[in-house]
Length: 207
Image (tube, rainbow, N blue to C red; front, top):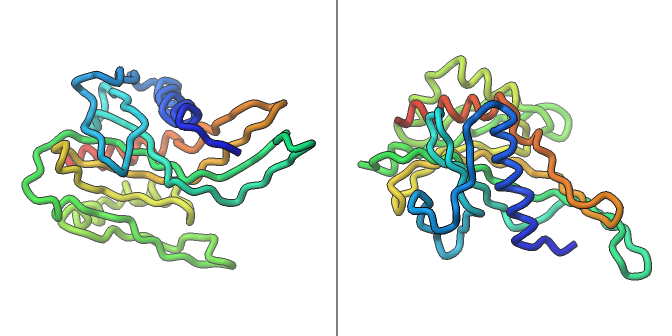
């Protein structure tokens, strides 16, 4: 399956914006030439930007990990009739703030697994700078994160000095299906309300 940039934007940015609206969040996609958009890197590229109002984060965007896994394809006469692949999507929630020290805001959720084939999470702790210590002290927030985080997910706080901002990055593989009969689909349940609420709380702590 050829996964074009246009399909990526449809599957990522527009679906995420629509997901916010479904949850009652005021969200809109910024034009490409908007002065509110951020400077793009040479290697790591955002798909565009969603402006969010009434939340602790200012912008949201989507990136892909660049690889596929767990896929299959059905062909007939050399034509792909149906295919299914897992694409590692990263959801970036961006807080515009002054960065005095990048290291202090770095934090990554480290998971301890249990069970057969490590498919369950026994516990999770934040590692990094002072932000990690702050997050570890948030008992209710971490309990909420444990309710939705899976072994395949990742969650971290990373500085973006070029844009004078901090990114809260939640990554989860998305199962994408494409075929002549079923068309292109994106599963919006990849960003449940609980995840967005937790990210919004983290953004509040960053501010």
